[in-house]
Every structure is written in C-alpha cells, then in structure tokens.
Amino acid sequence: MARGPRKTLEEKIEAKRSLIESLETRLESEKAELEEMLREKKLQELSAVSELIDESGLEPEEVAGILKEYIREQSA
Image (tube, rainbow, N blue to C red; front, side, top):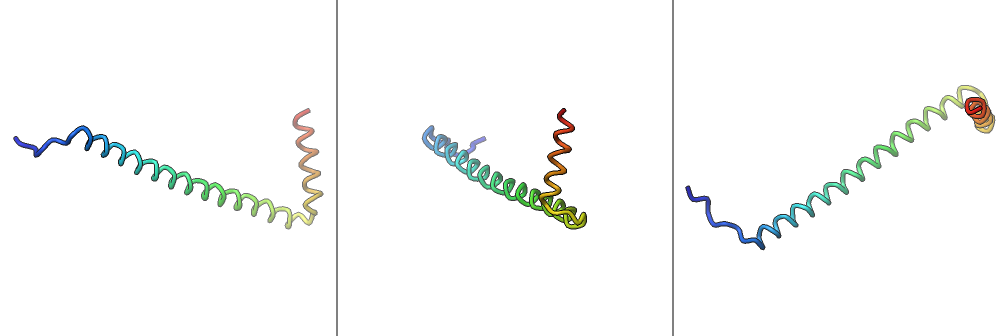
C-alpha cells in the first residue's frame, strides 16, 4: 500500500519545531489562565475576610492584633 511520498528529514525537523512552538504557546496561555484564576480566588477569599471584619464591628487593626496574638499563642 502506497502512503504517498515520504517526508524528508528537514520536513520532519520543521514539523517537530512547529509542534513544539505550538505547545509552548499553549502552555503560556494555560499559565496565564491559571494565574487569573488564582487572582480571582484570592480576591474572593479577601472579600470573605473583609465581610467578616465588617460584620464583627472591629477595626481591621484590631482584627490584625487578635490574629497576631492567636498566632503567637499557637506557635508557643
């Protein structure tokens, strides 16, 4: 069964380079998408903490002090 003309070594090399370039572009795109999702997650977490602070009636500095004290107690 004839499969058609065989590719030259140069054609195979160029095809492989092209494939690698495409994969690198895809990888960069996926990394950028991941970073955006991580930023969005962090904003959601910060929003939840901010809401909790607002509901507590405490000032952010007071909450920070409470957390610092708690961390000191836990690490002792």
